[in-house]
Image 1 (cartoon, rainbow, N blue to C red):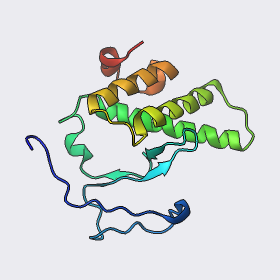
Image 2 (image 1 turned 120 degrees about the vertical axis):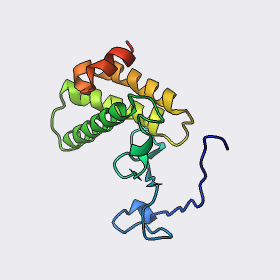
Image 3 (image 1 turned 180 degrees about the vertical axis):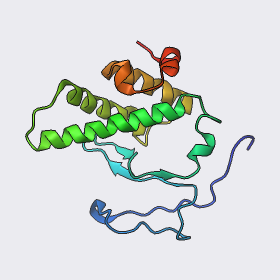
Image 4 (image 1 turned 135 degrees about the vertical axis):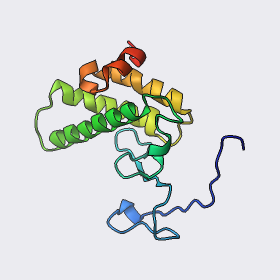
Length: 158
């Protein structure tokens, strides 16, 4: 495989009833290259890669080096905005009024889960970045993304 790698072992652990209070076993006792945490998204009904519980120790070796220059900024902004949606969902569940920003973040999270995080999505990194930029433009102002201006100037789509 030119420019590729290999996967030696894929260990899968299912957690009864979604209980995440117990340690996730692996074959070595160490998290090596990464760990993907999959869950069913309550808004879309799809199985997604949970961005808060998935781990990668090697991502810093490739993000922005082997991938496009905007990858780190887009990833960080998307996860932050996704976290804002989780906070908005908690507000909603506790009977608080939602701001316009809260509502937009909830809509972003639904589309982001369906179009990016869902495990049935099979796109390359460039397409993933382009789709995420489109979601940013759909739901947020440039300032709300907190992405460097040079990257906004280059990649923002209206």
